[in-house]
Length: 216
Ligand SMILES: Cc1cc2nc3c(=O)[nH]c(=O)nc-3n(C[C@H](O)[C@H](O)[C@H](O)COP(=O)(O)O)c2cc1C
Image (cartoon, rainbow, N blue to C red; front, side):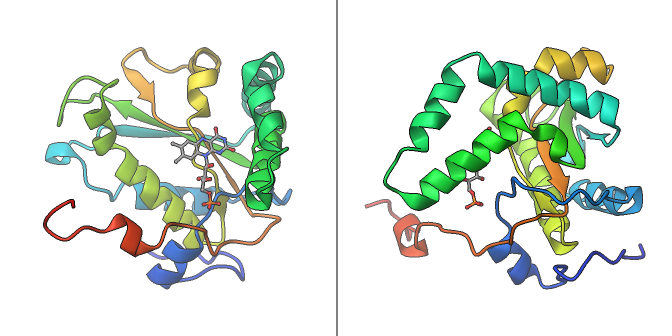
């Protein structure tokens, strides 16, 4: 495969990519070429899955009519209720990084159409390690691909936001993208050139999350 060139934020260093990949919620208007999107999806498709069944399809939404319908549906859902109250309350917290995240989340719910691309990964024809798409274990056959997608995008200088907002507008996605009944959305991921910086990220120190041999 010939690797495509991203922008000046690109990196071939896996450690840089892992340590600086973070939730991006603000985008430049610049479109993303389909070659680059294809490369990101190809990297996603290199992930492992149960019995190598590769039970996935990646729907890329890069045309305005469909993208706008999804964005309108998300905004309408957000505006009509509890989610908005939750996010607005979150913006009043003392913790400045939490406040920033909540105003970013509001921008995501209100202005999804500003993202040049939306990727919706689907579980499709799932048989391994389960054929029950709603189960926790079903996620093991798609979320590794999603993580590959986030990291590959980061390597190419593209920002992404992993979300489960597909659950809020699933019927709109199904109708507008003509999704068959036996395909199940697993995430909704806006993608594009960020208008904000990549990481570093704020995470628990490894000492807090690592155990050797026994929990206690
Ligand atoms: C399962 C999952 C669901 C998420 N859903 C949303 C969402 O609905 N809206 C949003 O703005 N961010 C969403 N996020 C993004 C998280 O808020 C973000 O990844 C986390 O705060 C870490 O951010 P950072 O990488 O910038 O530190 C979600 C992330 C995950 C993993």
